[in-house]
Image (cartoon, rainbow, N blue to C red):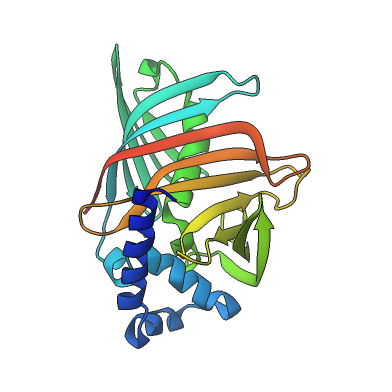
Length: 249
Protein backbone atom coordinates (compact mmCIF):
# COMPACT_ATOMS: atom_id res chain seq x y z
CA UNK A 1 0.00 0.00 0.00
CA UNK A 2 1.54 3.33 -1.02
CA UNK A 3 1.95 6.36 1.23
CA UNK A 4 -1.17 8.33 0.39
CA UNK A 5 -3.40 5.29 0.91
CA UNK A 6 -1.84 4.59 4.30
CA UNK A 7 -2.38 8.26 5.18
CA UNK A 8 -6.04 8.07 4.17
CA UNK A 9 -6.63 4.89 6.19
CA UNK A 10 -4.92 6.35 9.28
CA UNK A 11 -6.85 9.62 8.95
CA UNK A 12 -10.15 7.76 8.57
CA UNK A 13 -9.32 5.65 11.59
CA UNK A 14 -8.84 8.80 13.66
CA UNK A 15 -12.13 10.25 12.46
CA UNK A 16 -13.99 7.05 13.27
CA UNK A 17 -12.52 6.85 16.75
CA UNK A 18 -13.43 10.46 17.40
CA UNK A 19 -16.85 10.40 15.75
CA UNK A 20 -18.18 6.94 16.49
CA UNK A 21 -18.28 7.21 20.26
CA UNK A 22 -21.53 6.86 22.17
CA UNK A 23 -22.73 10.31 21.10
CA UNK A 24 -21.74 9.83 17.45
CA UNK A 25 -23.34 6.40 17.13
CA UNK A 26 -26.48 7.54 18.87
CA UNK A 27 -27.13 9.91 15.98
CA UNK A 28 -27.92 6.88 13.79
CA UNK A 29 -30.63 5.56 16.11
CA UNK A 30 -33.24 7.73 14.41
CA UNK A 31 -32.87 5.72 11.19
CA UNK A 32 -34.22 2.21 10.63
CA UNK A 33 -30.95 0.53 9.72
CA UNK A 34 -31.39 -2.85 11.38
CA UNK A 35 -28.33 -5.11 11.25
CA UNK A 36 -26.65 -2.68 8.81
CA UNK A 37 -26.45 0.06 11.43
CA UNK A 38 -22.81 -0.37 12.39
CA UNK A 39 -21.63 -0.79 8.79
CA UNK A 40 -23.52 2.26 7.55
CA UNK A 41 -22.50 4.37 10.54
CA UNK A 42 -18.86 3.47 9.93
CA UNK A 43 -19.31 4.31 6.25
CA UNK A 44 -20.67 7.79 6.98
CA UNK A 45 -18.12 8.47 9.70
CA UNK A 46 -15.36 7.49 7.28
CA UNK A 47 -16.55 10.35 5.06
CA UNK A 48 -16.10 12.83 7.89
CA UNK A 49 -19.10 12.13 10.08
CA UNK A 50 -22.82 12.70 10.11
CA UNK A 51 -22.65 15.94 12.10
CA UNK A 52 -20.14 17.45 9.68
CA UNK A 53 -22.17 16.54 6.59
CA UNK A 54 -25.33 17.98 8.14
CA UNK A 55 -23.63 21.38 8.00
CA UNK A 56 -23.00 21.11 4.24
CA UNK A 57 -25.59 22.74 2.01
CA UNK A 58 -23.97 22.04 -1.35
CA UNK A 59 -20.81 20.53 -2.81
CA UNK A 60 -19.31 22.45 -5.72
CA UNK A 61 -16.84 20.67 -7.98
CA UNK A 62 -15.13 20.92 -11.32
CA UNK A 63 -15.74 17.67 -13.17
CA UNK A 64 -14.66 15.80 -16.25
CA UNK A 65 -17.55 13.61 -17.33
CA UNK A 66 -16.97 10.86 -19.89
CA UNK A 67 -19.89 8.91 -21.33
CA UNK A 68 -19.19 5.72 -23.29
CA UNK A 69 -21.38 4.50 -26.11
CA UNK A 70 -22.14 0.85 -26.79
CA UNK A 71 -19.23 0.75 -29.28
CA UNK A 72 -16.92 2.41 -26.69
CA UNK A 73 -16.87 5.85 -28.25
CA UNK A 74 -16.16 8.56 -25.70
CA UNK A 75 -18.10 11.77 -25.17
CA UNK A 76 -16.20 14.10 -22.83
CA UNK A 77 -17.69 17.13 -21.08
CA UNK A 78 -16.05 19.57 -18.64
CA UNK A 79 -18.63 20.77 -16.16
CA UNK A 80 -19.07 22.68 -12.96
CA UNK A 81 -21.48 20.82 -10.72
CA UNK A 82 -23.40 21.79 -7.60
CA UNK A 83 -24.56 18.73 -5.66
CA UNK A 84 -27.11 19.02 -2.86
CA UNK A 85 -27.58 15.47 -1.66
CA UNK A 86 -29.94 16.33 1.19
CA UNK A 87 -32.51 17.97 -1.05
CA UNK A 88 -31.83 15.65 -3.99
CA UNK A 89 -30.71 18.33 -6.42
CA UNK A 90 -27.81 18.53 -8.86
CA UNK A 91 -26.98 21.39 -11.17
CA UNK A 92 -24.40 21.26 -13.94
CA UNK A 93 -23.11 23.95 -16.28
CA UNK A 94 -20.50 24.13 -19.01
CA UNK A 95 -19.07 26.34 -21.72
CA UNK A 96 -18.65 25.34 -25.34
CA UNK A 97 -17.27 27.19 -28.34
CA UNK A 98 -20.67 28.71 -29.09
CA UNK A 99 -22.20 29.33 -25.67
CA UNK A 100 -23.05 28.16 -22.18
CA UNK A 101 -25.50 25.49 -21.09
CA UNK A 102 -27.00 24.72 -17.69
CA UNK A 103 -28.98 21.71 -16.48
CA UNK A 104 -30.87 21.07 -13.25
CA UNK A 105 -32.03 17.67 -12.06
CA UNK A 106 -34.12 17.00 -8.96
CA UNK A 107 -35.01 13.39 -9.71
CA UNK A 108 -35.09 10.86 -12.55
CA UNK A 109 -38.06 12.57 -14.19
CA UNK A 110 -37.41 16.15 -13.09
CA UNK A 111 -34.92 17.66 -15.48
CA UNK A 112 -34.54 21.05 -17.13
CA UNK A 113 -31.91 22.28 -19.59
CA UNK A 114 -31.11 25.70 -21.01
CA UNK A 115 -28.68 26.15 -23.88
CA UNK A 116 -29.29 22.69 -25.34
CA UNK A 117 -28.38 24.06 -28.78
CA UNK A 118 -24.77 24.76 -27.70
CA UNK A 119 -23.99 21.25 -26.45
CA UNK A 120 -21.07 19.88 -28.45
CA UNK A 121 -20.44 16.49 -26.79
CA UNK A 122 -23.23 15.20 -24.57
CA UNK A 123 -26.82 15.14 -25.74
CA UNK A 124 -29.74 16.37 -23.61
CA UNK A 125 -30.83 12.76 -23.12
CA UNK A 126 -27.37 11.75 -21.90
CA UNK A 127 -27.42 14.57 -19.35
CA UNK A 128 -30.89 13.52 -18.25
CA UNK A 129 -29.62 9.99 -17.65
CA UNK A 130 -26.27 10.65 -15.98
CA UNK A 131 -27.03 13.52 -13.59
CA UNK A 132 -29.31 11.44 -11.32
CA UNK A 133 -26.61 8.76 -11.22
CA UNK A 134 -23.94 11.27 -10.17
CA UNK A 135 -26.25 12.77 -7.56
CA UNK A 136 -26.99 9.37 -6.07
CA UNK A 137 -23.46 7.94 -6.11
CA UNK A 138 -21.90 11.10 -4.66
CA UNK A 139 -24.06 10.73 -1.54
CA UNK A 140 -22.86 7.16 -0.98
CA UNK A 141 -24.06 5.62 2.31
CA UNK A 142 -25.96 8.79 3.20
CA UNK A 143 -28.58 7.61 0.70
CA UNK A 144 -29.75 5.12 3.33
CA UNK A 145 -30.37 7.71 6.03
CA UNK A 146 -34.04 8.47 5.57
CA UNK A 147 -34.11 8.98 1.80
CA UNK A 148 -36.30 6.11 0.68
CA UNK A 149 -33.68 3.40 0.32
CA UNK A 150 -33.74 0.83 3.10
CA UNK A 151 -31.00 -1.65 4.06
CA UNK A 152 -31.66 -5.39 4.13
CA UNK A 153 -29.29 -8.19 5.07
CA UNK A 154 -25.57 -7.74 5.70
CA UNK A 155 -22.95 -10.28 4.64
CA UNK A 156 -19.21 -10.69 4.09
CA UNK A 157 -18.33 -11.40 0.46
CA UNK A 158 -15.29 -11.75 -1.78
CA UNK A 159 -15.17 -9.56 -4.91
CA UNK A 160 -12.09 -9.92 -7.11
CA UNK A 161 -10.28 -11.45 -4.15
CA UNK A 162 -11.17 -8.60 -1.78
CA UNK A 163 -13.19 -9.11 1.35
CA UNK A 164 -16.02 -6.58 1.48
CA UNK A 165 -19.14 -6.06 3.58
CA UNK A 166 -22.25 -6.20 1.43
CA UNK A 167 -25.43 -4.37 2.44
CA UNK A 168 -28.42 -5.26 0.27
CA UNK A 169 -30.98 -2.48 -0.15
CA UNK A 170 -34.45 -1.89 -1.54
CA UNK A 171 -36.65 1.08 -2.34
CA UNK A 172 -35.76 4.55 -3.57
CA UNK A 173 -35.77 5.94 -7.10
CA UNK A 174 -32.20 4.96 -8.01
CA UNK A 175 -32.86 1.20 -7.91
CA UNK A 176 -29.63 0.46 -6.06
CA UNK A 177 -29.27 -3.24 -5.28
CA UNK A 178 -26.36 -3.36 -2.83
CA UNK A 179 -23.59 -1.31 -1.26
CA UNK A 180 -20.13 -2.80 -0.68
CA UNK A 181 -17.87 -1.43 2.07
CA UNK A 182 -14.24 -1.94 3.00
CA UNK A 183 -14.42 -3.52 6.47
CA UNK A 184 -11.13 -1.87 7.55
CA UNK A 185 -11.57 1.75 6.50
CA UNK A 186 -15.38 1.73 6.39
CA UNK A 187 -15.31 3.43 3.00
CA UNK A 188 -17.89 2.54 0.38
CA UNK A 189 -16.17 0.74 -2.49
CA UNK A 190 -18.98 -0.21 -4.87
CA UNK A 191 -22.69 0.21 -5.54
CA UNK A 192 -24.64 -2.16 -7.76
CA UNK A 193 -27.86 -1.07 -9.43
CA UNK A 194 -30.50 -2.82 -11.48
CA UNK A 195 -29.12 -6.21 -10.47
CA UNK A 196 -26.45 -7.65 -8.19
CA UNK A 197 -25.33 -10.83 -9.92
CA UNK A 198 -23.03 -11.54 -12.88
CA UNK A 199 -24.85 -12.17 -16.11
CA UNK A 200 -27.73 -9.86 -15.23
CA UNK A 201 -28.63 -6.45 -16.65
CA UNK A 202 -27.22 -3.91 -14.22
CA UNK A 203 -24.30 -1.71 -13.33
CA UNK A 204 -21.58 -1.47 -10.72
CA UNK A 205 -20.09 1.85 -9.60
CA UNK A 206 -16.49 1.94 -8.34
CA UNK A 207 -15.02 4.68 -6.12
CA UNK A 208 -11.76 6.41 -5.32
CA UNK A 209 -11.60 9.18 -2.71
CA UNK A 210 -9.96 12.47 -1.77
CA UNK A 211 -9.73 14.37 1.51
CA UNK A 212 -11.07 17.92 1.28
CA UNK A 213 -9.38 20.87 3.02
CA UNK A 214 -12.11 20.92 5.69
CA UNK A 215 -11.48 17.26 6.53
CA UNK A 216 -14.48 15.77 4.73
CA UNK A 217 -13.95 12.84 2.37
CA UNK A 218 -15.54 12.99 -1.09
CA UNK A 219 -15.22 10.84 -4.21
CA UNK A 220 -12.29 11.66 -6.46
CA UNK A 221 -13.65 9.42 -9.18
CA UNK A 222 -16.71 7.33 -9.80
CA UNK A 223 -16.71 4.78 -12.58
CA UNK A 224 -19.88 3.05 -13.73
CA UNK A 225 -19.51 -0.28 -15.52
CA UNK A 226 -21.90 -2.93 -16.71
CA UNK A 227 -22.11 -6.09 -14.66
CA UNK A 228 -19.88 -8.79 -16.08
CA UNK A 229 -21.13 -11.98 -17.65
CA UNK A 230 -19.22 -14.15 -15.20
CA UNK A 231 -17.88 -11.62 -12.68
CA UNK A 232 -19.53 -8.76 -10.85
CA UNK A 233 -17.22 -6.03 -12.16
CA UNK A 234 -17.49 -6.09 -15.94
CA UNK A 235 -15.16 -4.41 -18.39
CA UNK A 236 -17.59 -2.33 -20.51
CA UNK A 237 -17.51 1.21 -19.13
CA UNK A 238 -20.58 3.43 -19.20
CA UNK A 239 -19.63 6.55 -17.26
CA UNK A 240 -16.53 8.09 -15.65
CA UNK A 241 -16.63 11.21 -13.47
CA UNK A 242 -13.51 12.88 -12.07
CA UNK A 243 -14.03 15.53 -9.37
CA UNK A 244 -11.50 18.30 -8.68
CA UNK A 245 -11.43 21.62 -6.82
CA UNK A 246 -14.18 20.23 -4.59
CA UNK A 247 -15.65 22.63 -2.03
CA UNK A 248 -18.26 21.70 0.55
CA UNK A 249 -20.22 24.79 1.59
